Amino acid sequence: GQQVMQIPQYQHVQEGEDFTTYCNSSTTLSNIQWYKQRPGGHPVFLIQLVKSGEVKKQKRLTFQFGEAKKNSSLHITATQTTDVGTYFCAANNNDMRFGAGTRLTVKP
Amino acid sequence: DGGITQSPKYLFRKEGQNVTLSCEQNLNHDAMYWYRQDPGQGLRLIYYSQIVNDFQKGDIAEGYSVSREKKESFPLTVTSAQKNPTAFYLCASSTKGGHNQPQHFGDGTRLSIL
Image 1 (spheres, rainbow over the protein chains, first blue to last red):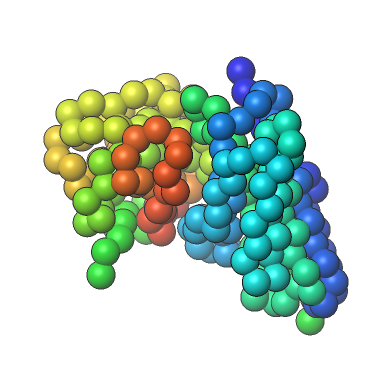
Image 2 (tube, chains in turn cyan, purple):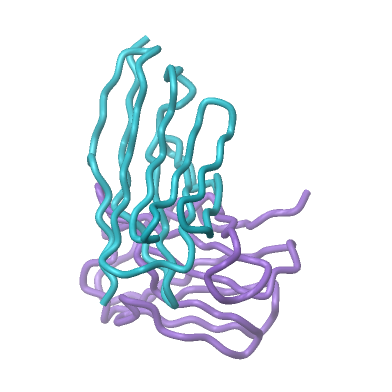
């Protein structure tokens, strides 16, 4: 069955540093979604990527979908303390599978 | 205000007891989902429903049951057959079934064993 790997599991950065989380699927995907979960909160939808090689930006966040539609990344430029939380990818191919998430902490 | 309401926020279960977690949405969404989240892990799908009076098992359905008698409601029962029920349970909904729609989540219910 479909397997989704998300790395790293944890990332601790100094405020102002960049951050990247990667999501890799064992199968070709129809689309991929990204969610953010603040500590003690629930996942909130950020974006969906559908096309091969697609790149989307939301302010300091850049989302990429690989050419083979098997991997994706989320990059945050110049992190802020408001970025703390766990970032999940949700890989879709008939079934949807969530990655284990990358927990981001930011030191002021 | 539209959204998904889960109750209770915290729930304690005694050994051998069934408990039911409530999930109500007023977003007029067709599809609803139940996930389990354990520390350091992603969300695992328990059950989902794409339409009223119909639901399908997810990856970890054993020890759980659901019903979908109304579009707005998708309660989850954690039965005594679920031997390790301690977890954070999240309910979600989307405009329609399939996996091309964003999912909207409730605030979750944290279940613990007494």
